[in-house]
Image (cartoon, rainbow, N blue to C red; front, side, top):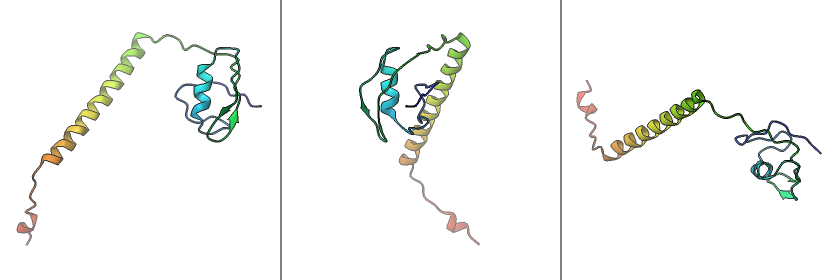
Length: 102
């Protein structure tokens, strides 16, 4: 038996289990105080008992703005990358550098 504490949605590795997406999905699908059935993971089979679930504090306005800015910047970078890729595909470039060699 093993206890895992401070598990979050975005955690990819579980101490002692490794990468187990089904474990995380099972944990966050349980109600506090309930136990799952046997779940087959990638590296092991396990039974999960959720003893305590901590709700995160509500997002403050500053944190919301920070997340909004981060998502906006990511989207801008995606659009720029896609735009440059489209320009490269449409470009008709002829390389005349050899003409200028001495």
